Length: 244
Image (cartoon, rainbow, N blue to C red; front, top):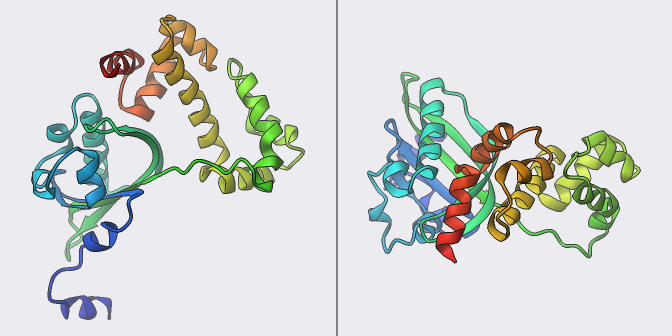
């Protein structure tokens, strides 16, 4: 029934016009090589481009500088090769226009009538700042402060739930309402945010920053930082100095 309906439309429905009206969401469709076929205005603008056509037919490595473009392309190739979706991946995006922000990224494979993977569709939705005046925030404020003060030995989610005098389930649900993230994602973001700040504002060794935000060694910290931001801590520090 859906296919019959879509076949009646004058133009193939891609969702582009709809997502053009959602400025907090980056939207795209890519082909089997990972090149952009459809993009919304948000992606175009954040790339600092005048027209969407400047993105079409190009892969992330051709749009974003290394190593960020490599990370996006590696994600695409995994989805295209395995058919396994990427769901609600917490990421920090640094766009060519120098816009920076946290988002949740989802990518799904697209198949033809024979079940062959021919491309992918994806969205990255911006995280919104929490409203610190709400009752929801106040219920978890003690746990948030405790986490911020103990990042060098990051507390477990059950410990934080105990600080908030909630069950783990209740704490996770509250954190989702306040931050739009599950509790584990929120704690990861807190640690990476602190690391970013130190990388930009201090000349502390990366090994010392790793310990400050709760990693056993620099190698583990670098892996997690790169997975989340697309850059090594050293690359991120260098980028920050170039901006200033």
